[in-house]
Length: 406
Ligand code: PLP
Image (cartoon, rainbow, N blue to C red):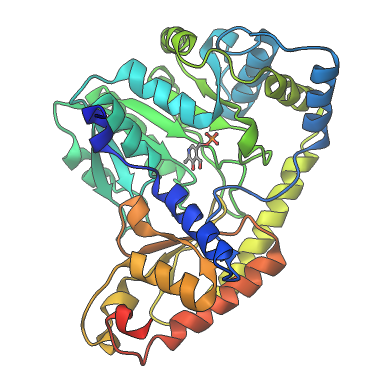
């Protein structure tokens, strides 16, 4: 009954995990939810005021398909500042979140059977969108290199069918931040093999000191013509539900995206466009700095608690607002009778025994990973992580398989 393409992907693993946490809550289990892909915070006052003013001014009609001109101009200015390269309005498309920007890019640039390199673990939507357009994800394992791809591994994965490479920095789910040398190397590789670079910097507002966000385009001016900058106000301004993201790309790509969007969603929500425009025009950066500070404090406190874990490696979480745990040693430890399970088992056990919900790495192509969001209130985060540490450390003397200890 359904089209064949529906067999090539399923509901996002992160959405499933959030639903599982909700179900547990409804069943009366007191759950601390560390699954959220968003920061639980109020939006900036400029955004709220901008939305209210737009409603009161009776702004309620279609806008230009890829966003109102002043918003595109303000975003062009933002991207110019961030990359150090002057951008024009015809290089910007406003989209319903970064997700639509990514999907537009896949539709506009990829043919069936084209291959796209994706460093793994990866955000679950990257391969799903490729599957929808009939293209093929080619995963490059980063787990033995602090979750960053090695240039030689990327090169080895390139075939005559390769068209693009995904660079997501900071990375969801691992929090890894790409350094300047790596990015410059990727830019050179892309030029050598004539590849697009899908540069997803949705978490660039959360790069924790001393690390800094490096931009593909500022490292190599030549990369500009092949880089598709994907960004969003979802995370940076805690506006996930408002659905405003953007694509910065060569004018030809923007024109193609405009044609696509004209037959799909038309313009992004008009009230949200005006709200973000007011913020870009009037805000002084205080909101963003305060949010990053809050997230950074939560990270430090969380890392301290997680450092007490036995048999579990915790990555540095240099960017974004996720901790990423490597459960491999725990899962294969001799103390579990030599048998192995996967992160789904641990995620299930944590909900049941600790009342803590995280997202199993199976959603990100990694059966040994576990993603925990620290975008919630610090107090709640600390309680959740303490429970998690107690529960996982108590597993040691217990005999595998996990089913037996449930
Ligand atoms: N890119 C990455 C890496 C993400 O993690 C997300 C959301 O979680 C998005 C893009 C999409 O963000 P939005 O569509 O809310 O702007």
